[in-house]
Length: 408
Image 1 (cartoon, rainbow, N blue to C red):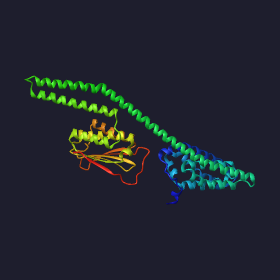
Image 2 (cartoon, rainbow, N blue to C red):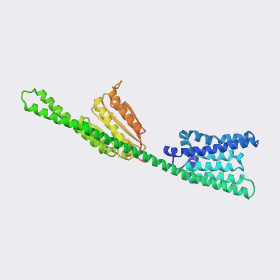
Image 3 (tube, helix red, strand yellow):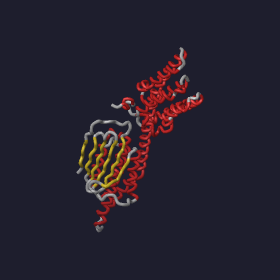
Image 4 (cartoon, rainbow, N blue to C red):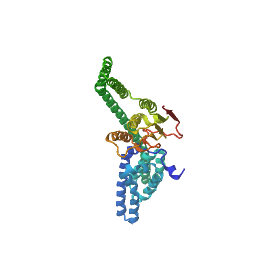
């Protein structure tokens, strides 16, 4: 283990945690910048020359960059132990113009609080010890100077503890906020599905039920009356069968809207079996067993919808004889691959087809992922969708077992 790894925080700070502590980090950096500005004035008034000014200027980037660019550079400060150690050294050297001033304690306390936010109490206290010793030696001789130095050292350690507790609470609050937002999103999605189910039941489903009865009655009447051309009776029966199928599919969609299935493997496998029965196109399905745990309920709903849309695109446009569907994960991302041996993508897509592609891409973006269309391994079309794991993510150290299902 290298020197930087020894000094770095034990647990990497994720993006949500960096956003949670970002406001406090900026405030503490602004406090340090204000102290540095005062130190610069003291260096000029005391006639310490360019050396004193240079020392203060060297310390400024350690506060200025996080204060201005925490959103983009915060991950570097949050995990780089060398930067934290360099901040200690620069602090010890750059604050010489503040020797004997209470502002030295203010800067040291703000610095210790920053370390507590980023590194936790143990590492923050270890890195604050040089500043504590620094304050004990730079005040005037006598008991007053000793008491002042001890108070400054105690404040520095106390601020390290305060920063650690504040960081823990900020991260916990951010996690609760994210969970609340997820719950609200699920509630809104459920309400929208129920609204669609009610609308479909009151309009399309009812109309199809009536059309089913009318088409069946027409076919029966044509069969009973002689002298009717055979093609008319056959067309009536085909119409009756088509309307009945549409009614059944609508009822199934209503059930899916009201009772959304859980997970990925089971619902996708069942959807593929129904699709194969309807189209006659065999699909080889390969699904990692850990996909359900990695996707979570939010990602799973979008993933199922994308697989259904991609298979429908194959049915409508690919003219394929077989399809391969793979859903794999390494614990950090989930990858969906739909590969067919059909005619491939045309040079210009019709508007209707673009709507389906746009819908898949929009769902991928909603999950912070991406979808890419390329040429397939068998000359058709391959669609690869990559989705990050639903927070909080898990980590596995070994490859996932795979379950393979082939549909005839």
